[in-house]
Image 1: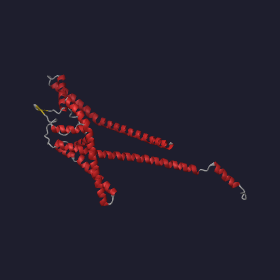
Image 2: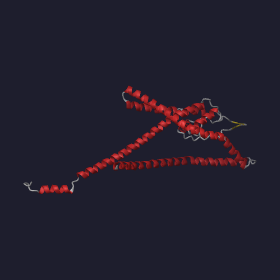
Image 3: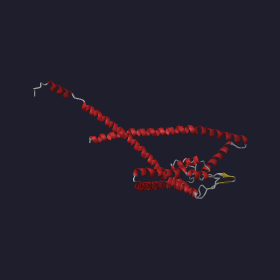
Image 4: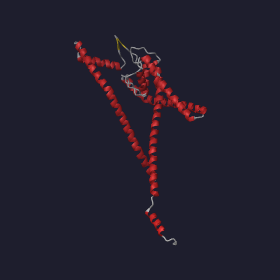
Length: 313
């Protein structure tokens, strides 16, 4: 009983420092990101705000018939219309974000929790339906991603097993197969799609790669979204292909993230195991030194034996 309680107490002592260290690392990482974004984006934001105010006062100065409040209402209306997917094109407006293809892409972005934020339902009935649609769709999406990930993992394991049987070296075959799967996933889901976005959207490769990672990781800032340029004509298959890419890409990236988590946890366990073994070794050395040190009784017995006459029994 005492031994079990001691082991449990020792387990708690081992877990608490690890949890605190993980929490400190998490907070430090978030603070590092906050400082970096503040330093990188802060000056650009202040410059944009100053430029916007300057353009506003220049417009009011050049066209004295315009009134400040009326201009503010016009600007707010333009912003609201743009968020709803409407843009002015001469004497007409552009539509198409809420056609069937656009609605299909919005449904995918909703249940995958990407949530770009550039498009959202405006009517009360659509908002209520979106709640229930996401409530049941998000678990369904997680189940599907888990199943796709298991199929990918089982395929990699089968290839590794067959290759190991041919090479007669299972460990090397496993490493080779996992490396090929990782490289293939990088090509299909992160490295090659930016070329497609560059051709159709007109983005740079860096912008396409940025959009790919932000989308597959479900961050979904909404600063880059496909099919939103009113000046371009998109193929009918484009958004459907990107939707399939999102599903399989999220499953692949989830496997990669789980692998990274496993590696971090294993490294943490190895460090704790090493510390525990070093402490056990230190304790054994201390116990050995204690056992090897002669006690006073032993010293007295030895001295009495040495002082006895040779003929004594």
